[in-house]
Amino acid sequence: MSILIAVKGWSPEEWVDAVKSVAPGRAVEAAGAVTDPDAVQYALVWGPERGALARYPNLRAIFSLGAGVDHLTSDPELPDVPVARIVDPDLTMRMTEWVVLQVLLHHRQHLAYARQQAARQWKSLRQAAASEVRVGVMGLGVLGRDAAEALKRLGFQVAGWSRSARDIPGLTTFHGEGGLEAFLAGTDILVVLLPLTDDTRGILDGRLIDSLAKDGPLGGPVLINAGRGKLQVEADIDAALRDGRLKGATLDVFSTEPLPAESPLWSAPNLVITPHVAADSDPIAVSRNVVRQIEAPGRGEPLEGLVDRSRGDWPTRSAVQLGGNLGGRGTWRPW
Ligand code: OXD
Image 1 (cartoon, rainbow, N blue to C red):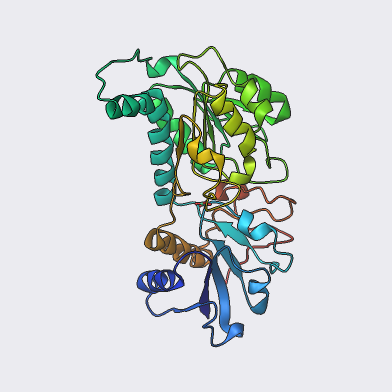
Image 2 (image 1 turned 180 degrees about the vertical axis):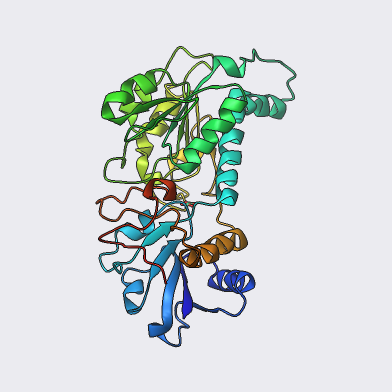
């Protein structure tokens, strides 16, 4: 039995070493150096080439090494085996840190103070209390829920929106097309942690921006996106920042990455850009998680973060909702 590492844009050696260090004795090979394709049973992947996984006839499961799985959905030759995304406290905490940092940065007017510092200006600005500010989290998966809880603990008024109804204790939730307008109308800072699906592509457009609350204490709405770049209509975000319909924004993801040097976003006012680093997949933490998962069926446990491949756009469900093995396509079977 061997474990395959197929990653694009990341160092395969670092991942091979990480998996070996947490699972000594297991055969771990990088794509391109596989000695026996028949022996490959598990693939740990990030952005593999199209068709790359079809070479392994005995593959039993594919582990996406990040929170998203959109890097896999477009591969028509993806083997018909269970696909799991990483649901790991390390990844979740990294995302929550980033979200809290960005919300506080806009809430505490950090960009204005940075401009004042550059101008050697000592001037205090009126500061709203967190309890006056309404934060709306779009996307209530593991990451969205954790960020929402952290923001609530800081005193913000927090609401959430998801595609289908979610009942989350202590959180006001909205769902679906029908709930979107009311959710946006009560949001001063919009935090987006949605997956990229056919339904969400381009959702962050001018119309959505114009639906955000305009009467909040920040002087205008703020958009924070760490979901996927293709959720954004970037020309609309740029225009809204320039004409003041958006008071500020932070974007970690872009429709083209790296963000091209000629993109007007680089010079958009009150925009913070981070280079898709909101929640890095730490090789050791993630490898520990995957190895535990590979061994889970032996302990009678279900696979966590199993992706429902029967849905065209691959929404994700948690192990708790699955409650064990799935039937049909993508069956997770013990070994
Ligand atoms: C992820 C990401 O999906 O970092 O984990 O983009």
